[in-house]
Amino acid sequence: MNKKKTKNINKTEILLRERENILDTKEKQLDETIQEYRKLISEVKDLKQKYLDAVKGVNEIKSKYEKEMETQLQRIRKQK
Image (cartoon, rainbow, N blue to C red; front, side, top):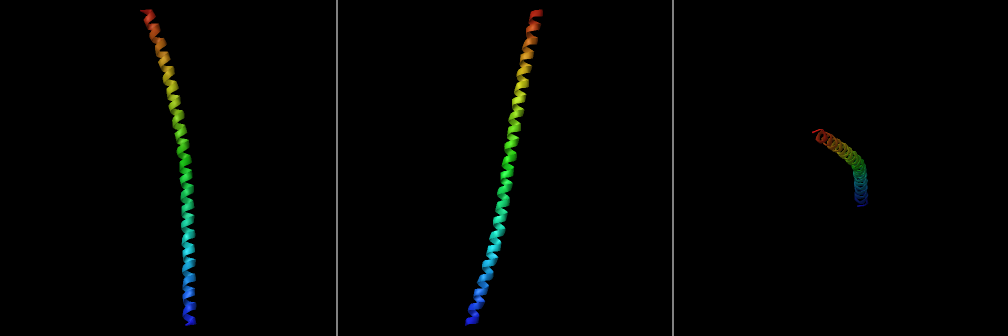
């Protein structure tokens, strides 16, 4: 009977160790996923800022173009 108890205790210890190993592996995978997620969020924020800067630049160019066209139109009207 004592031998059977010892055998069951050993099985339990092995299963607990396996469980701990699995949990450690899953925890590492989760940490890696979280790090990758944070990295991607950072990249998206950078891309958003670049996009906003580009839109701002385009709007500035558009504004300059419209002012220049207005100036040219006024010159043409004065020449007529």
